[in-house]
Image 1 (cartoon, rainbow, N blue to C red):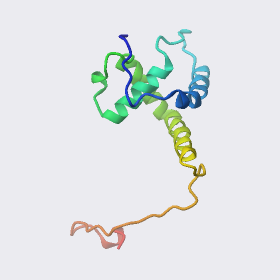
Image 2: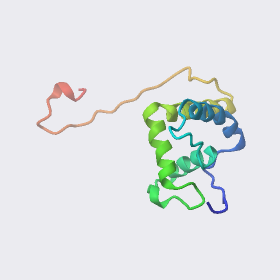
Image 3: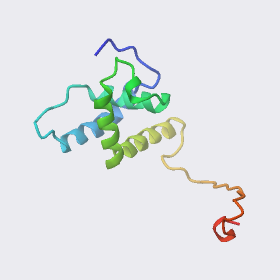
Length: 129
């Protein structure tokens, strides 16, 4: 792995302090069958996932200072499938709300909808009209 440049999508030390226990607990619950502990720092894996998510680049175009795309994709898809990504998002969402001086959960939600015209052959009962 080449020298880290740092990207604005990288986790801050404060964010990593919140995420590290979750990631460490996940790793403890999912030991490698071969006993392999992992070659890449988990913070770099998370940073690479955040970079890919924000930039929208193809996995193969991740900058070379991140772990290989195959390692990053493994965690991305595994965490997506088992809900770990949602837990990470929730932890960071709570942090953002706390920083803004708000409670963890919103006290009010406003849902707005628009009428959408459907094709002529779509039954009116299914269009929300």
